[in-house]
Amino acid sequence: MGLESQTEKSIYEKYNLKKVINASGRMTILGVSTPRPEVVNTVCKGLNEYFEIKDLVDKTGQYIANLLNVENAVVVSCASAGIAQAVAGVIVKDDLDLLYNLHASDKYVPREIIVPKGHNVNFGAPIGTMVGLGGGIVVEAGYANECKPDHIESLINPDTAAILYVKSHHCVQKSMLSVTQAASIAKKYNIPLIVDAAAEEDLQTYYQQGADLVIYSGAKAIEGPTSGLVIGRQQFVEWVKLQSQGIGRPMKVGKEGILGLTKAIELYVTDPRQETGQQMVTKMTPFIEKLNAIDGISARVVWDGAGRDIARAEISFDAKVIGKSATEMIHLMKQGEIAVYFREYKANEGKLDADVRSVTAEQLDIIYNKIKRIIQGAN
Ligand SMILES: *Cc1c(COP(=O)(O)O)cnc(C)c1O
Image (tube, rainbow, N blue to C red; front, top):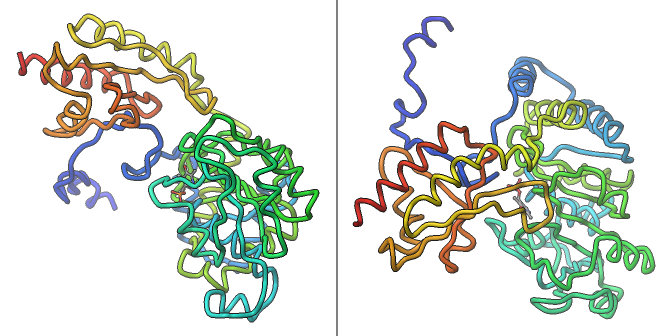
């Protein structure tokens, strides 16, 4: 190992990869997050051992469930896999014929998954694709900008398999029913409520609000390895686990992912290192002040639209002054030796957001200098 590590080139050099500054947040297209050393260590240790995998799945699941004070839990390969297997789980339950023939079987079982229309989003892949993978059929409730409890209730029928609620910054936020409201409908009609909370920070609240299954991405807020977490009520999680013999197999998580995420959850709960929003503000204040000194740019602190404790630097470009639109700036910032990625959702309003959770103060300087160079080159 000694020799290798002395002579080995960096990953960037070896494969001629582009260096990235990630000011976009926990983005899958950039590698999401960086686990703590303890998590990396656990992944390495896990890789070097053998286990009875069922034992590993059950015991780590129970360990996580105890940490979070929920009935049951299972580590999966990612949140998308969690959605697909949660949907399959509530459709198949423990019917082995359906488990083995989920898509081919013409056995009658409820397969409709009611999703508020404003939650039927593309998070990098469409929610509906995951539902379809799980053998479900999406039924949209309400409108693009509104979903009330009545909109869901009016769609419930004997073919309804579950309600799927997507708690996410990707979703329409206004005039949507709450998780609690969705849970009370689910309870009233005795159908399960699945919550996709992939990027959310609170690992308990949606379960406590009455969801039967809640899905998280392992590498987003929890900062684990590539993985996902499904928590929920005892029987429902057992049905999700059973999917490892069905659609779960091509999306299986390895022992290293199971152990790594379990450790990451333990640290997340017992020793949070979460930078608070206020700390983010402190880190980016000098950056914002310097940007405001550039003609044609205005920058300010904005808070996460989905209510998480995340502050970001919103940078507005006056195209008339600097000669470039926000879209052009986004493109140019990705060029050159180091690619800088921002949040691009507001580009059509002439703005972009810098998420500083994975950005150091030195990198903020690099970003500032790059912006300045691009703009001054234009003048
Ligand atoms: C990121 C995300 C997912 C997918 O998570 P993966 O772990 O990358 O599969 C699903 N739903 C929402 C709302 C997300 O933000």
